[in-house]
Length: 217
Ligand SMILES: [Zn+2]
Ligand SMILES: [Zn+2]
Image 1 (cartoon, rainbow, N blue to C red):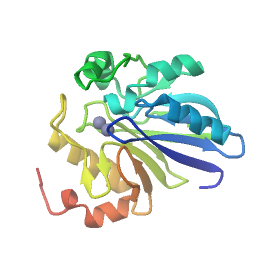
Image 2 (image 1 turned 135 degrees about the vertical axis):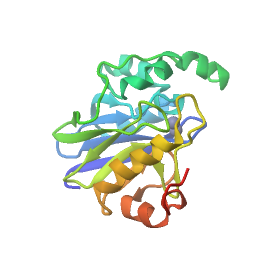
Image 3 (image 1 turned 30 degrees about the horizontal axis):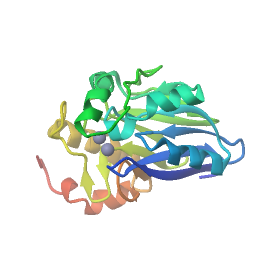
């Protein structure tokens, strides 16, 4: 992975894998999915000495986006992602937060919504954007092709897939996203997911119970 480094910071009661992604040579980077617990994120930024250039969001759920507005304001950086189909989730973060007993959660409006085929930059790293609906309608996945890694949000997990029972969820669309967009990335591609341990596309293709057989769901 050359000069690229990643640090996972579990945040919120949902133990969401907020990810700090940076170039170790330039010390420039991004925070991906700052769902909350901003003190922990600030501490990780301070420990690594990284200058944060932007915030990336994989989707609009509170455990991923709940701290984005506050961190954006504090750092003075833009928010990029997810796809605009998750706008309704980002708009309703305060109500969702109250529903979970989380105080002070703010709505966030990204500076840039993302679409299939877009690219985003983190320092001198370029990430390809895949629109992968199913877990939420506006979920996106960030892929560093030459470096062989991806940030997949809640689309795919080690041994599982994203839940599809939340508003806008669609089980068939989720499997289509995984089969048509993630598995073709190649078995050697490693990924960081929104919850739990990292994995590789190959490990999931071979062992993930949700991806075995034809026509599941
Ligand atoms: Zn989610
Ligand atoms: Zn999540």
